[in-house]
Length: 288
Image 1: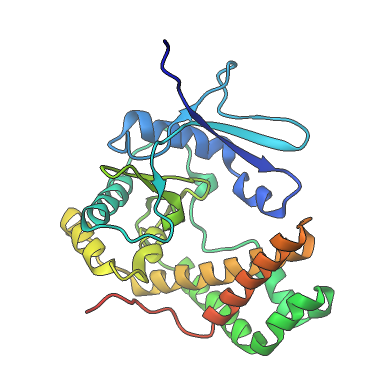
Image 2: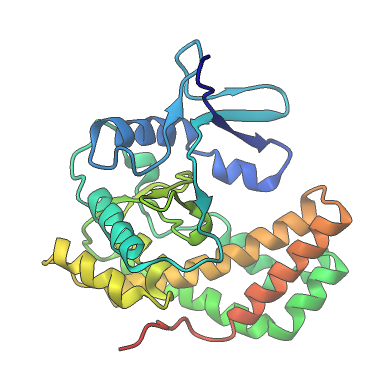
């Protein structure tokens, strides 16, 4: 009897606003991920792509884009805590990614420019065109407009300052969180590479900075990268960028996507949470 083999099919719905961002560089990020899995120390620590019969990394029809992966038998970390061993593994995965100095790809499309395409649109909504948004969205935003505006202004200041700096870049995942990690008890796997970027290491470090295990993570990362020190300005840029990005994406989904009532309610609650979170400046929650 033949052993059954399982696969994971990822489907991007073209009608959703978020799909355009997630698939903007799909024809670059998929070959890079395939190379990472086949030609680097990350083999067996990330997703594995399955090509089509025509040797492509994806296929599509009028409504959807499809990408097929090998199925990883394990559990999404999600709301569970990482063990010390898993935290060490995560630091090693991130470090191995950051150590890849030479790649067979033109990375100019995904190189950090310290620009964000959505900022001007978010700024217009907050500053001038709030009435264009649905009533429920306005109700969430209105009590905190000045705080959001201040964060946007801070983002512009950080962006302008960093454009003048000569910073070292490396390959970064840019979206490391527990819902993008799978564990099979023995190993940790890093998923969802749509945001891969050639950027300063802080583009990944910021994701872990607010985790209670940051000290343990960064201790191992420093052991593997003894010449590295966190650039606080770059770190703050990415922390601020992610807060604003999350707010923008939830506004956009609520305003334009065809959501059922339950999806709308869930996304509205997520927007409330992100707006509440922006009130306080990002802090590292690890013990010092």
